[in-house]
Length: 338
Image (cartoon, rainbow, N blue to C red; front, side, top):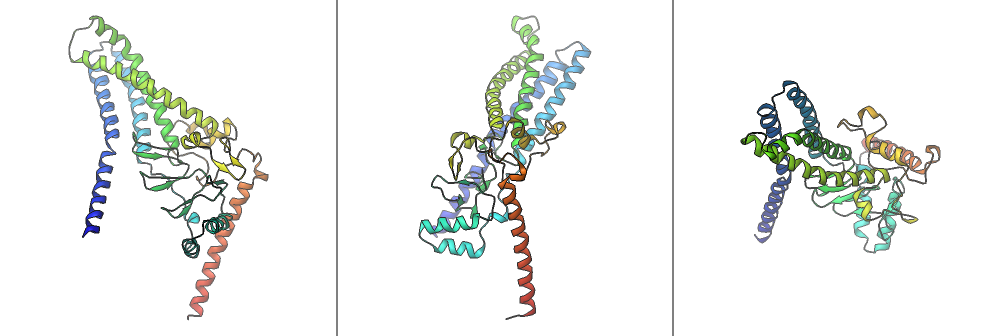
């Protein structure tokens, strides 16, 4: 009975946590919906008299608003990518690892398994990084998120404002969300400024519009300042090819910790996030390079001599070989049942 009670309590707490985790998103959504009403109705429809100005403001505003909503939606509802099955321990390896009590032997077992995979980073102890909760070998730049309760490929951070992990699958969307948020705030602030001053000095009559326009200006400036710091920081991270976690704790390689281990030059760093086709850079569709399981290293200048790509080929060949072997075994078992 006590066990059942503890399980029920744990489920209840997790349910409450999931509900409360949406509060920051609801706050952002409420502010944005209010800003839409204040700008479209109170400013453009009720305050502006110039028809051309009104039409231009409404057209540009709705483009900014649509792009903001699109990127915000993608940041929230794009699920974080987790390591594929190739990084999970086989049944025999898992049994061998769990039955072994000596840490040095466990480290050796993981090292043998990792030789078939493109893993170059290590734990602080020098061992292969392994997640006991997810039971997977962690690919480079992968970390376990305690909130999402899963390992996330190229995890940057867990963002409460999107109620999601920002990682390989949605980092581009998160950057675009920040950039279009800034654009949204800048457009509102610049177009509202003159009417803000007119209401402030009393050149326009008092009414509902005055309250909305005054607060619209203040909120837009406040969000612009805070977003600029965050966006600037992430632009710096992209230029250096680091995640937020890597900026605080340098990834460890066989040769030791190196904050610039994945830095392959600004142009290639940007292309890893946004892709090579510049026409798609500012559209929230997935164009990031790779699959999140392996990344070029700074000391691998050419693809022809790139051990990472060589490991990838061996990885794929071994996977195909294991599949063929598995099929052969199943056939032999069918032909010779015991």
